Image (tube, rainbow, N blue to C red; front, top):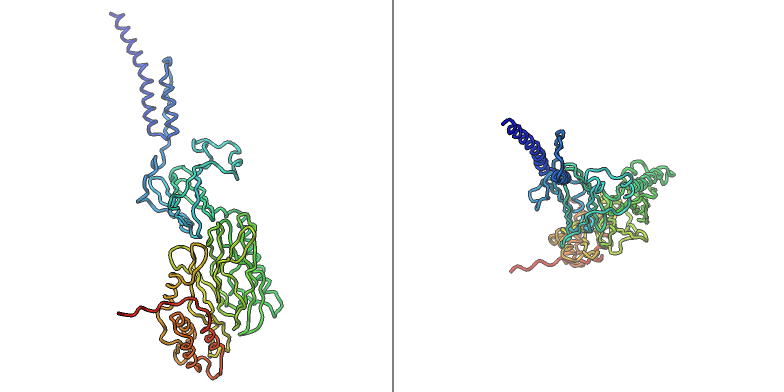
Length: 510
């Protein structure tokens, strides 16, 4: 009996010894089910190795290595409806919006950006390549070798509507670099964890230095103008009233700027005039520049206004045009011989006025007559006059104009002043035929309203003869006791100035 008992005890010990490895394998398998894909692969290899026939040897217990939790959802959402809107700087101007949900980011760019470019493609890369994706350090020199080369990545193209959608992880330690290309520009969307930012392709040091040089040269030209001989010298006050020249406006893969080359002054008092020599500058991504003369502008001190430069690719050639919104509000009573072009373009040959831009007078403003995103223009046609102190009134305005006449930008890169959008804008400026042209207020002439009424009356079809008769009847109000005066002469000349638009007569009531 003692022999049988001893055999039974030895059998129980051997049975327990064989059960222990099997229990360890089950534990490892359970851990792998909650691990990342890399950890799951390693666990599967370990499990396969343990299932192979091996001798049963005593071994020390091994500590279980916890796997890193997977950031967000393991699979991207099928829809981002109800997700959180992410505010990424510059996205709106590019026609893009960002939404995050369950650890993923959707970056959607519409078929047109704010400067007229359309999305071409996106290229998604994981920084550091496969090594980093697997948790390994990149090989020495691999990053440097890849600089300037086309790195592999997932390429995405716009859909049939022209919209481009990118979806990338947006949590944990995940990182992605997304190169976004439009027909006129390029950005990189850097995503790191739950943060994202857009980096413009021309934001590098060479371009910044090129723009800084243009600005410094414009400042130097203004300082030099204050050191000229007294008869030509600008005063410090006059210099501070000038627009800020030499400031770069980002556009496409570079920037535009309106630079000051030289400035001088002449005359005194009411005849004081400043002469400005201006230059259009294009700074490319490498900081190199192209230039063209914008022209020489003369204006009374404080009489030139230039709004922020704008850019738009009107002709869809991949190069953004420059729009210079400016107003010549005072010119010491003298009419300029010719005003600069409002839109400029560039190509490999250089910079030149945009061939399809409308002619402007007195100034040009940027409007948006509809929702097509193309900047429309407003100017004064032949209905602008600069007046001196002897205009005929006791207090003469520096300038009188009619209402702005509008040029609607067209998809083919041209402009129309007679289509529905342009006529609709004129109708808003001149809703009704004026009851009277010459407007009197407190015994004096309201010159600004009179000038506007004259052009609006013409747009509503009032004849030259009728308008001339109204001006003649108010001669004393226009000129006082003088037989003639510049104000009346200017308004009379508007009766024959070309007006290419006419507002439809109101429909007769039934």
